[in-house]
Length: 450
Ligand code: GDP
Ligand code: GDP
Image (cartoon, rainbow, N blue to C red; front, side, top):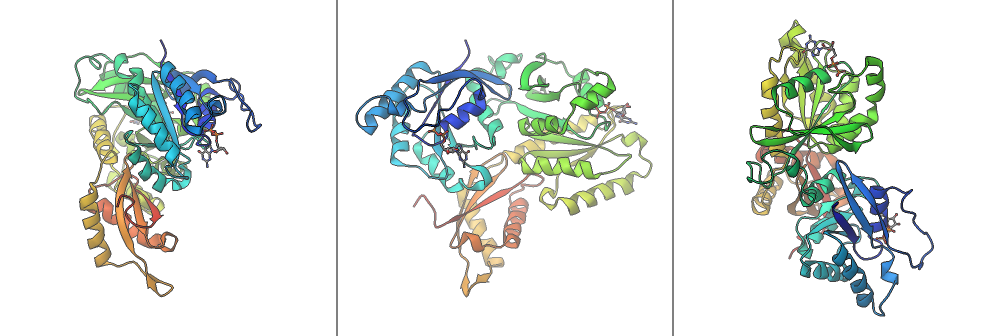
């Protein structure tokens, strides 16, 4: 039985948009005419490696009942009845409304599991709404943008445990409450330009470990993932077509498109960017690195073919320099040298991947964070703009993976980029958040909770 997920929420939060993204437009047409009573739409949804049956409840609010609450109840009651899981959407740009709270109450009273997603979060615009959404009492809101396709791997992470994925698929996972209980699998992508040695590395990694599940279709059209267990931790490796199974070279090069790389990065928690040590860091390597940072993924730079590098000291210095200059936001990312061919250095790769994964998942408590903010602002106060000093009032971490903070300021738009960099660098150093992207979303006002 596939999992049935109902997408619920008040009108206009983006339910249909999300449904269309998950199910595809061909299966589910949107009727643009306002006020049209629609039949409920259902379809087979695909989200990365997960497939489920999705129910779109948009439009049902027009279907029955006389009061708003009555109509809402009719809609949610149906959804609650038929679904295994309720995916509640709120509009992070609009903030939490009383109607959202009504929905949340109804869902919370049901015995069904609920995943809360805050939509319209693209470009950081929903940060305040994301904070507010915690108040609904439905757990951590997952920031997404249905329209832009952002946050889908976080949504996958939130939904997957309810589908029995991936632990049911992995030996020793479901029953015995393994070492990674509550943490789930680490999604790993190995990316890089053609010929840097990705296939060789993947074969070496998998050659030493038993593959517990076969390739599963579905992550992207041409990609599969492979799950295996490493020191009791589960790893899901996104395998873009041909990585393990060597197809003819020409075919392989054709199929490993930039789109595949991007998909792999979006699926990943940690991306290993493999570069060719003989050739050094090239422009295309940096392009991929930038993509990894923009997607907010943790990254490890692996310098391959180390066996064939003559001036090792010079090469590594050059690579670190170039990286630091071109992508200062990636300061401190771990760099590992290895030879996929001989296997030398490969054993240090996965420990590094897990270390950076922990940092990427890191959470800083609000108390210490605000003590830190006070000290940091004291040491180097924000500038005076138009005769008044900017006030930074309160900071809270609104999200992990990557660490994302909301900073409440008197005039958010006036906080200069350079000051944000100062804060970001401080966070990095003082809370040990080295080597992962850090985001700060500026909001106007004070602590939203008081
Ligand atoms: P529904 O009534 O909950 O089904 O909402 P719709 O899917 O019809 O979306 C309502 C409006 O929000 C439409 O104008 C969408 O284009 C817009 N919308 C949906 N998702 C997003 C998003 O991720 N970001 C932004 N900015 N707008 C969105
Ligand atoms: P991909 O296109 O990134 O998957 O790269 P491949 O794994 O197909 O490797 C491209 C070429 O680099 C092959 O000829 C490999 O034998 C070679 N290669 C891969 N890893 C190493 C290494 O560690 N050292 C050396 N010297 N050659 C390597």
